[in-house]
Length: 152
Image (cartoon, rainbow, N blue to C red):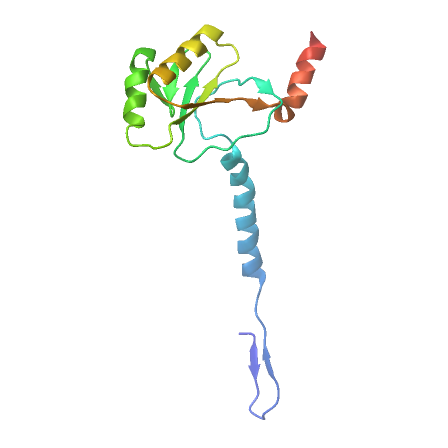
């Protein structure tokens, strides 16, 4: 033990071994360094190539409803597949008890404009008053999109 206690009323010496504390802190630091980029990624599990625009990033609430149209023109509501014919009923059910009727629409850049417009029409018909288009920031894609243009 690292304590030296003398009976003669002299000094007390107590040392704390900080090596285990440093080891634990380094392990925690590594765990946070690995998990932080994973948490930063978008919550959606449906991969889409969003169009890049110069706009300020928007924030969505945790319980936000996100409609995704992937490259195969499949629809997803909060990462769950749904048919276009069933979308209106699904949205009416989701927004029955919500005061703020707001949707975020993510569409792959290769999806024809007509499909996106049809989806938007169903959303409007379901009584959704706010429709937000999700895009990718130019700054985040900057290097990748510039290389494509130069290569052509």
